[in-house]
Length: 353
Image (cartoon, rainbow, N blue to C red):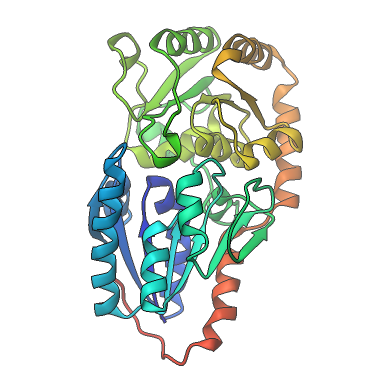
């Protein structure tokens, strides 16, 4: 088979990387297209994954123009390469291209409040894969699975945290540290959203710093007084860092979930939630969700958690329960592809581009 994977965000690189590896090992051909957003292209380069850049991130109303450009380029690539299957997260362009060219398009998504994209893309895609905890309405062929996107690449069968990786970047995994994440609010599902103010960010860092070293990862430029806390080392070490952190605090639902599935307690601060962070809070207690107006409550929880000598044991037991109840998502996706393959009359082709 020929499979095309469309990447819109750095997290999508991680989601599809192990799936791509298995497809190649089985003799299939994988084409990767990418949107130039944050470090998506950089991650692909550092993972030695060939790709074709088909658009650059735009914001606001310019997102519409960007989508038209990338969809046009994707159509040309599909006509040339003739893929049997298109896959992507969110997937507006692959949904359109698949519908026009009659190619199977599979959309994987977990963000309910991206209502514009969801309303548009879901009915066009052949399949929409969502976690069981997804709370939004879908117009189309929805397939639910008992997992999270982050268990595609951070399941214990796929990822093992390394102390050596941290030490090579000058970090000390055995010393207490807290990871803080601030986002840029330029995604389509961020329209109408507001993030933490500079003073709120300072309050978070100041509170956390009384319990250990603070490392910040941020999509937007940090104020000068917070820049000293910027996480050292290349961006691809972040999952190793999260795994050894005492606590995660941030505006990113994805990174909160990453911390959760790695066994690190997470504090998620956002005015809009996600089905998966709600489940991770209510079912496992590994994520605590707060709005911006609840920052005081969030900081109280941070102090309580970091002062509680029993917190580590509670988190470990909850993490073990999560891994026992949620699936290896890469294995699940590969099984879905294997069931789809007999319907195709093509012979496997090796290589990628």
